[in-house]
Image (cartoon, rainbow, N blue to C red; front, side, top):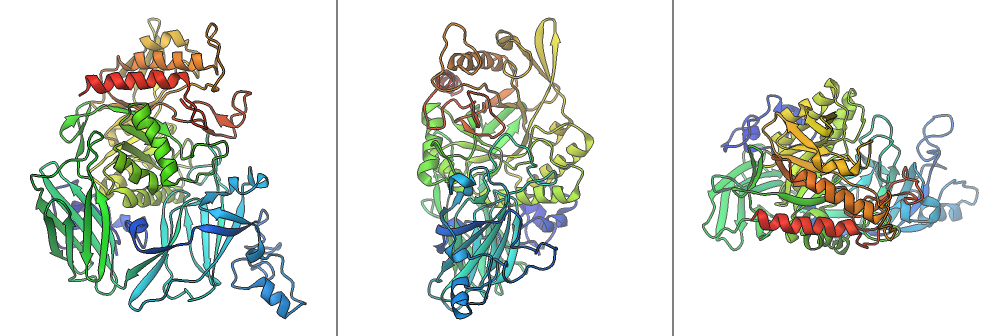
Length: 631
């Protein structure tokens, strides 16, 4: 059964019931069943839950001793770290017992966080790590189901609860959940997670990136409690013809013929309907006159309550439209210029461990919204925490969200495509009620060939089937020539035909042989009648390194001049609709080992601790001017 909600048109191809105007259902819509999670648990972070975050034990396993013995046979009980054995207790009862592990007495670390911050020895560890948590469940209630939900585990996770392997997940930045109702105990539950950070040519992303691997349990671990029949998925949005649509999916034994209500507080609006045999219902109503549309200037959110039987789900949702008209991006019927910057998921500090709290997220996004006069952020190069997308909703920042189809993944391998498709589905299903998210990206700087284009086109098709209300894009590269003495850039990537918005990463004046003084005269050409975002441009600078006269590379002066000249170039692109230069803050990158880098990519306009470089003011002033001229 298709456990989540497609666009209304896609649903109509699969189940009986009313269909509303929307994107056409893909011809192979049933194939989406293979990429959607068994349990969506939409809005899980706002449900009643028991948070298992906090101290966990961890143990490295570089030789994978806990998975198989040295001859490849099934793992010996002495080494089986996923078992339910209390090693200390068993050893006391039988002094002759021999174990090569003891997770319950291993070192402790605070979860969520990457193991990069657990200890100095873990800084460059890449491999298998076992985590263990003992806990008592909250008082058991009759007629309830319990799901174990992980916000993200990087990269592969194998989950054991009370000695049973309950599931596996691949993909480091998207949520997943398992039904553990019948596996839980009232007391002393033993939860073990095997986390494998190793990438290969077949993973998404592959082995080499320009950012830190960050293995570990990166986001909250929750025990989510629901009724026996629960609201598994919801998709509530506003349409260009002035209607509010709500697609709801119910799961459980009472999913059929279930009455569903969707109430929008403050609008005196309630939508009602009854689910079909598959547990789906599609609701629609004309939007009240008092509706205030969400925008960066007025990020209005409404409290929305969904009720079905014994279940009730609350969310805060903004209503807005986003579309493309010719070479313009149009928000709520008006052209919008995206004034933004790219961002990696790292908190400010000398030793970030990808611990994204509301406070950490607000600190990062505030630099964009208030410091840079921005209205947009590109969340690179993977889905960021739902803490961040919710914060963008509240603060009023438009969001580009992407999956890590990065550089040279194995485009010819069907299994790799399946991993990417599942990542995109999990990302979209988590965040398609976030008004801030306007662009789903399917890749970054991928080489142009037929196999790659077919791979990314499949992702773009999936994206539209899962959410036809937003724009599809990808960060592409472009052709460069010297014509009549000036730099000439041509956008000819065939993938553009499958995208709503073109996006180009360009670094003329930093990489390559182009002189920085020649950048402003660069000319751009495109035969596509589509808007363009300069999704990346930038130059490295070490905060505090100044040389006003020479302006050498890695100085703040060179970076500021690079921004000045690149923004002058941008002003001459007639089909430009947005900017997200690279990048807000300096971030970890082990492949960067210049004396001014030392394991950091220094293209941030602020340092890793938040100190603003000269280029920050150049960009801030430019965006302030753009905000005035595009009102």
